[in-house]
Image 1 (cartoon, one colour):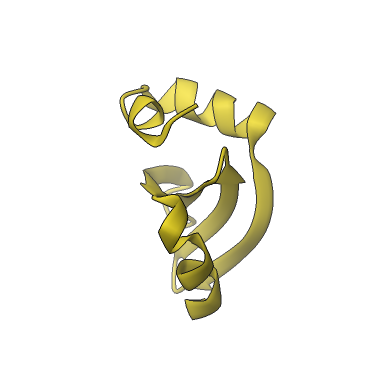
Image 2 (cartoon, one colour; image 1 turned 90 degrees about the vertical axis):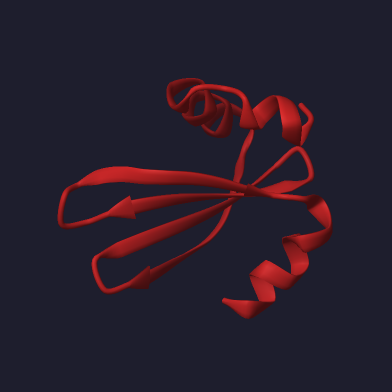
Amino acid sequence: MKLYKFNILNVNKKLAYIGSNGLFIDNHIINDTLINYYVVDNFLVEIIYNTECQSITEIKSVKSGFVQKKIVLH
């Protein structure tokens, strides 16, 4: 799937697609926020989860060119 097509999916479809096609690579915890990183079809996806509210607050996707930079920064 292309990044543009992924971005127009609703949250439930994004999560389903990540669950079946994504490769978990890392996570990062900042205060009450847990960020899980996945590689999906040559782009990076961040699932941002608020541990205090126990809910997903955002799903971000990044172009394939930024994947290595993003991983190295964290």
